[in-house]
Image (cartoon, rainbow, N blue to C red; front, side):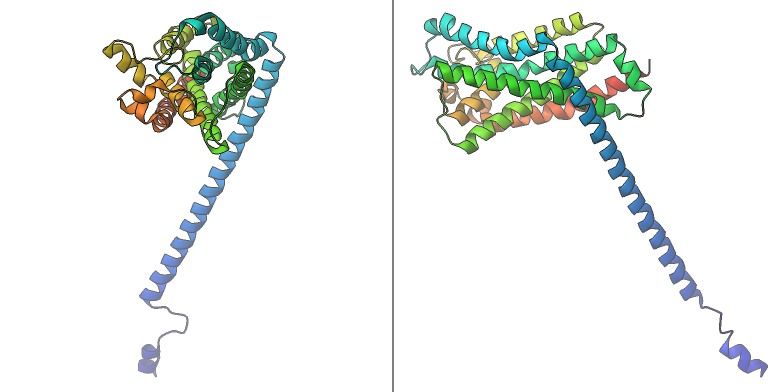
Length: 309
């Protein structure tokens, strides 16, 4: 009897293999639950950051709309620039191939306007810092990136208004789009992508500037040379070789050329044998992607360092 009982074993006893299998199953179940919890936490964090970003963008946009200077900056300024270059300088500027200067001009003004988004973002953030707004944000459970993203999105919305005013003024002066809706949408998308990338550059300046005046000065020191050493207002075909090379790789030149190509406007740069001018649409997208990849983490880092002081 004792030998038979020992051979059959206890009915509740389990083999080592079964115990190992149950342990592996429990471990796998715990791992799945942990992964599901991590995904849920990440989704909750992303949703929280998105809500913060939307609230801050709305707050910034509402404040901009009630500020006359901001409204004039996106309405009157584009009109003045278009009229100034069309009537004052247009008669003395001859394009290679004798194309319409007014049709050539609008693509350049689009590019300069997108670049100018950086200055608005830098000045706005410098004002927020000097006014103590960023210090108040520091005491709230808010995403660091949402503070900057809300500001850049609000500036992008105003840039869309400025682009619409520029296009409307150009249409009144004889500028026309000679391509289809797809190319027009592509040109608008490229322009807004570059504007958004430039606004993150402005965010970096705003985090480093000690005042709104210094942010404005730094913005002008960057935007003015970029605009004047580009093909925004004149063709670069007759520039000296070294300066033409600089102008051809200038992101403002690349965006202006891409807009002209996509909108069917005069494009003397098409005859220039340089990679950015021959592949302006791709080059503009790459410029924006590189700027975003470099400037977004830098701006968030500078913001985190600023609020820890």
